[in-house]
Length: 131
Image (tube, rainbow, N blue to C red; front, side, top):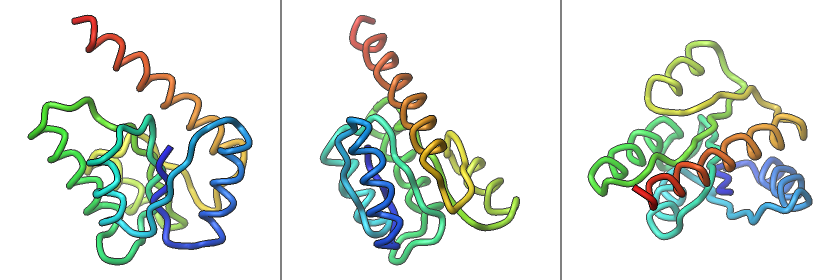
């Protein structure tokens, strides 16, 4: 699981919840670090903060989706996060996020989304390998 989040308190909370549930967790402190990490490693799911420095969540999602298209990669499941308005939610979904959760996130949201999307990523990977 890749957590793209610039708030260290949120990073620590999310990382602890997901690690305790058995997920391997990497953290990116801004959108550019997220983009760099996903080019190096294949993640099952990414939690993407909307408001981040250097490259916003929306810009990072757009860059990730463009990279996947250029390389013919399966889409990385991206769960966008924000404490903002419905406008932010709609923008995230329009630019390619798979799901949106409101901040502050809680343990139930994190685990539900991680398990749902990580499972689907594994199934997609198996299907593409057998095709």
